[in-house]
Length: 114
Image (tube, rainbow, N blue to C red):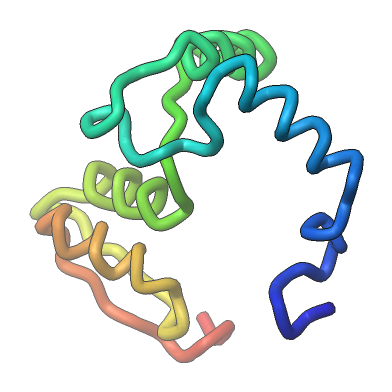
């Protein structure tokens, strides 16, 4: 079902529905509910970040709400005024925003043609 974005069939999964219902009765919250700035932190987020940083043998980990936030956050801090970022012309808008925030000059090349 590619039309409704339910191509994995999860919207009709009774097992998933039952699991969500159990977790909701336990935590009274489903999903990210917005950023930590708006809705606060959760113990589950802290534990997941700790697990992921241990798994990847890194110092720490930061969960973000979306791919847009991840790209914007990454690209806004990896470049500076003395760097130049080259981007595929079809790169996602979140990368454009991150590059603008970085103050690094950037330019585009034709899709898949470096």
